[in-house]
Image 1 (spheres, rainbow, N blue to C red):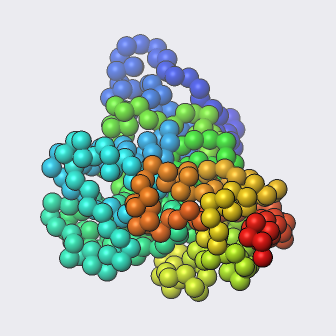
Image 2: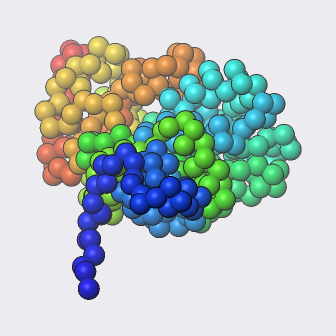
Image 3: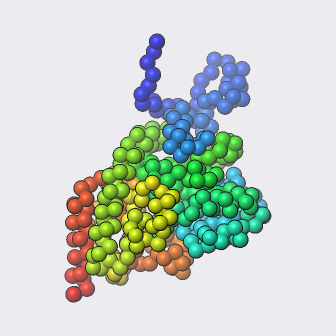
Length: 377
């Protein structure tokens, strides 16, 4: 008896060989491994892992989070359809829906966080899909998933939830009624800032339709990226535990510091969605967003002063990363669109890593000291 792989091998082959033409045609008909744009064993291994984590019937891996989102929307929507979109979404998602979907005769209806309670009234039969993030990027607002799922299904619409910030460790949208969950795997799922990828997970029939669209669009995850993500998922819960503890400690510390106008973290009682987060999530996550009481020059000086925390436009890795959303993730939005989301020039977003908490706090305090020196007080 042969042993089995503990770690899935990286199948780099673009195509797979068969003994005869009938064998090849049978493999195509059965959906076997034939061509890696269609399916690949290494990619399938990580898909099955995400499927289990999200408690979904199936999952698909993509070349990026945006590839997953774009494929999902193009699978679901047709000319004349309308979709409801939470305004507080990732900048790339916002731009794709704002700029591209109307070209194909699809109308987005934007809603704010305050519309969550009125969604049943807003939904009409022509709305095919409702798209939300929870927690949102970058203000970490929490949207009621179960209530939104009930309202969406009552109008015959699908509910899609971007679960990137929470991860399946802290939130299970499908268990709360969502139809599809999407992720940027470049963030917490991969966890080491060394891959670009994305996922969608949901019911088997819908994933089959998405798989056909993925094949046509070509946005499948590379086998090496799939292996790196599979490896990252092995430590997801352990990483999140330390990262979330760091985030909670930093949020509490910054909440009382000078030159910090406001701290956004779902685990703080001052957060507007604290009670909803306690009901809906099993943990509050590893991202802290805060608004500095200074101008853009002060923000630049604060960021430049940091030594342990790295200035970089991403999140979810073992290293603590900090960014300025108005200049990075949401730079493609107009100032008025950013203001509607509450994204001002003083807002920064911190993704906590695995470093010692006191080292991170000391680094942030050093940055705040630079703002104090700049102000001359």
